[in-house]
Image (tube, rainbow, N blue to C red; front, side, top):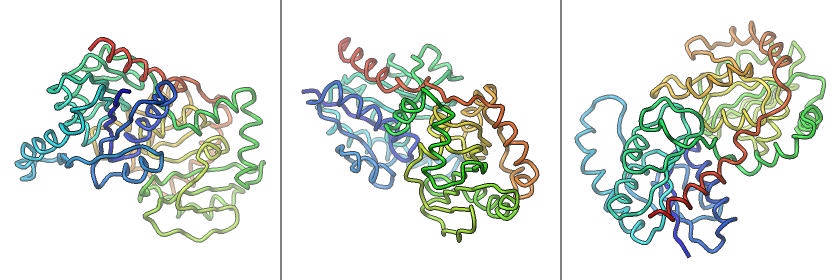
Length: 359
C-alpha cells in the first residue's frame, strides 16, 4: 500500500483539481492511502473531509503581493512549514502538488526526503509555489499551454474536472441541443426565455453582484431569466419574477448547460468547467494577482465562446446596453461543449505512477 500526498489548498481552484485526481487514483489503486496537506484557514477544511479524504495541516506561508514588513517573517514561517511537512512526507511514496500556499513547503521537504514530485499548473501564468517546485522535479503537467520557461516541456493534460461536470458532458455528448433544453427545464426556467447565469464566486464577487443587481429590472423587462449565485458570504437579494438569487448553486452542471450567457470571474476551474459544458461567457477577470485570470480566458475568446471585460468597465449600464449583443454571440457559438479536459485526472495519475516507477 502506497501513501499519496496531495498539496493544494486555500481556494477551490487548487482543491477541486486535487480532489478529482484523488478520486481517480483511488479507482486505480483502491488500497492506497490518500492524504491532503492544507492550512487551518483554507476551503480544504470543508471540501476535503466532505469528499472522504484525510486532511493534515501545516502553517500557512503567506506572501503579500506588495513589499511589506511581513516579508521579514517569510523565512521563519517557511522553515516551520517545511519541518511540519516532514512528518507527513516521511512515509509518502509520491507528492502531487497543485500550487497555493501549502505547496511550496511540501515541494522543498519532498525533495529533501527523496519523495518523487508531480506538479500540475492550472493557470496560464503559474504562481510562485509551482514555479519553485518546477525547479525540483521533471514531472510537470499543465492544464493548457503555459507561458513560463519552467513549464516549457510540461505534459499538457487539461484540468481535472469534478465528477458531476465530467458526467454531464458524457450524458450530453450525443445531443447537446436537447441536453441544454432539459437542463433549463430541470432548473425551473422557461425553455424559450434566454437564461443569464451570474457566478458571484464561492465568496461572492462584489463588483459583479453590484452590476447585475442594477440591471435586473431591465433584464426582466426584456423577458430574460436570471440565475444569480451571490456567494455564501453575501446577503441574499429578494426574488422577483424570473430573477432567482441563490447563495450557492448545487447543480452547477445544469447551470452551465442551461445558460445562454454566463457572467463570471475567469479562474482556471471556472474556465475549464465552462469549456466543457458552457455556451457563451462574459468573463470579468479579477483585477489583482499576476494577470492569470485574463490569460485563462483568452483561448475561449479565440474559440468564439467568450468576451473578456476589464472590471473598471463593468457596470449595470454596460450590461443593459450589451446583453443583447452577448446573447446574439451565444446563438452563433458552438452548441456542443468540449472533451479536452475529460481525461486530465487519469493523465496526472499516469504521470504519478511513472514518477514512482522511476524513483
